[in-house]
Length: 317
Image 1 (tube, rainbow, N blue to C red):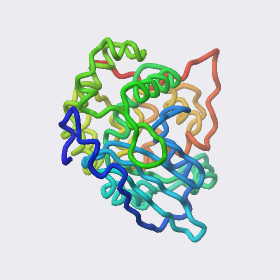
Image 2: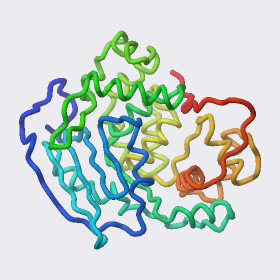
Image 3: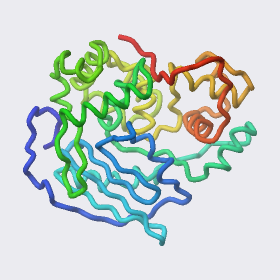
Image 4: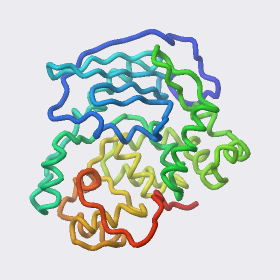
C-alpha cells in the first residue's frame, strides 16, 4: 500500500514477515528519555519502552508495521520489523535512535541552567519517526485537556477501534487514518472527546499528504505547512515537528506550563507569557526545542500557587 487512502487496507499481505538489520547506536543515548515522547499513556497499547528495548507499532506509508529495537553491549542495536511496512521502519530505525540528531550551534554555556541540564542529560537525543501519524492524533487529543484525560482518550481509541499489530508482541495498532477521517461525533463522545477535537482530527486525517510533506522540510516552511491545516496550531505543529522530523528548534507555544518552566530556569520568573519564553530562548535559535527538552527533563520546577492541573495544549478551532 503506497498511500493512506483506503478505509479497509489489505491486512493479510506479509503480515508476519520479518526483516532485520543491525545498526550503530549513537553514544551517549538514553533510550527511555529520548523516546518517551512516543508513549502517550501509561497503558499505551501501541508501544513498550524500556532502557534497553523498544517495541512499537504504527501505520507507515507502506502499511502497518511493528519495529523492535534491542540494544547490545557492543554499542549496536538489533532491529526487527514485521508487516507490510517493515522495510520502511528498518530504513527509519537509525533516525528513530537519534543518529541524525545534529547539535551544531548548540552552546549550553549561554546559561548555567542549560549547561547543568546538558551535563545531567548527555544521552537525551532528538529522535525522528518520519511519519506525522505517529504523533498527530494523540497530540490533537491532548489539546485543551489534562494529560490524564488525553491519555485515557488515546488508550480508549486504540483499544476500541484499533486492531492487532503485525508480529508476535501483542501490540495494538491505532485506527487507520482513513477510518478516523469518518469516525462520527457520537463515537468520539463515547471516548470522552468533544466535537471540536473530533473535527480537528477528521480534518487532519483528510489532509495527511500535505502534513506528511512537512516532515522533510526545514523548520520555518515545515511549521508553515503544518499550521496551514485548520485545527493544527503552533503547539500541535511543534510536537509533530519534534517527533516526526527531529526538529531541534520546535517550541511548544501555547502550552500552559512550558513557558513558566523555561522562564523560571532561565530568568527566575515563576510565570511568563509565550513571548517572554521565546525571548529567553533566543540565544539558542535553531536549537530552542533542545533547550526546552533539557530543561523539562533536568531543570527546576517553577513554584506553584495553589492546585494546578496539567493542562496541555490550548488550541482552538
